[in-house]
Length: 350
Image (cartoon, rainbow, N blue to C red; front, side, top):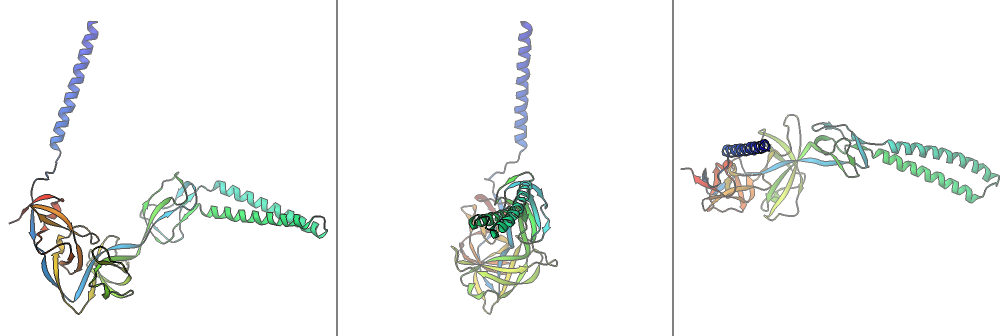
């Protein structure tokens, strides 16, 4: 009995020591984890939006988008038995991307062909019997209809067989695999994401003041910011409906090339020659946060950096026009924003 009590006490002591050690290690680990102090002030440079004169060549910043990007889906249903491409592969239009299990359909087709062969023989005999008036016209017609019905059924099965192959609807690059081998798929189940960057669309936002300067099919110069290269593009479409900020979406079509490779998501700038100079409220381009689709900037309010959206207009190399959303009295962050988060305290650099 004493031995059992002694062992129990020893086990309890060992468990207590283990728990204490784990708690101690947990506290030490927490001390080593860096936790950002949201109350700490971040050192930044600030200034106010200023009036800036944009010269005769107006520029509009945008983002390149793929001309075609679709999820390639299965038309049939069944188990995915072959996936013939992987992410990053270049495929051509009509190329087989994947295959579904077709064993049952092949057996049904074989059976349908045998049935048609039998019905053709029966029709030939009925045709002879009909000439000899050994069978009625109605019976002969029923046999002919049975043969036509069997042929239609064969065509349906052959279409189902074609649906077991997933084909590329256009040439492009496989950018995402969306199904695995052995998966059961249904009609409409996406297999891969296919992206075509042979041609790209540069989406720019044009203020109401300038939208009538663009015409469909018009040739424009497009600067690829990442490569510091200029190519020729053409206006692909002009939105007939402005957004909430009275900007119009204009798409510029640009052909890709090996000399100046453009990737989806890169920045591009459309330059438009104009005889007029425009003076407008502007912010330094370096202060921009996010993409040109949803441009934002840090505005200092009560000692805190508040992420604020605004509507951009024309641009040049260093400045971006402010159509709305900011005023000349706003204090904006132009340096140090990489360390900021919305609502953080700031300290101005002397």
